Image (cartoon, rainbow, N blue to C red; front, side):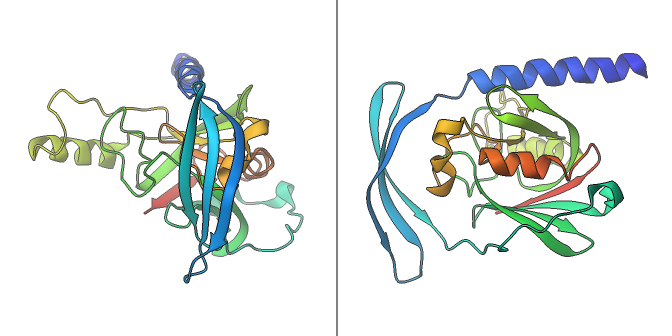
Length: 226
């Protein structure tokens, strides 16, 4: 058992380290224009540099249903078995549900096309469905990293079915190292502006990933919906 735990920790450390190095840094982010559409969404034209190339992008973010002031939580008496992390990709949000009550809510971003389910390694999409947190740790670039159990058994079933139907190539791999993390502190605006930049992970602002981290532990359930 000790060997198995040690192996999982080593695998977690190396896989998340290689993941972090694969993401290009967004620099000099600025808003060129901003307006509300008839649905109340914020439409922004933004500009930034990625790999020393200028990128101009239009983002559309829905109104954020905030919870107001964050009330202090007695973490010593928090029953971690009653915590659920709810991820809504359509509305760019992550919520902490405790005993069927929403006690925290954060804005989040995902991969470049947030409304696609993950099908294979390299598609930069966030997997949908039920998952479980496997591990969590500090991260030098993203403040914290919270690993989920993708691919789990349902992920593997979906993967094989898509291969059989020819939706993905027969030589495709399923991928791994999916979780929650922060952003570099100079690029937290990417979350507010709805810029999809991860390789399939769920990115929160630095102060929000720190807050989420205290509520979860290995075994915490996670539900991700489109």
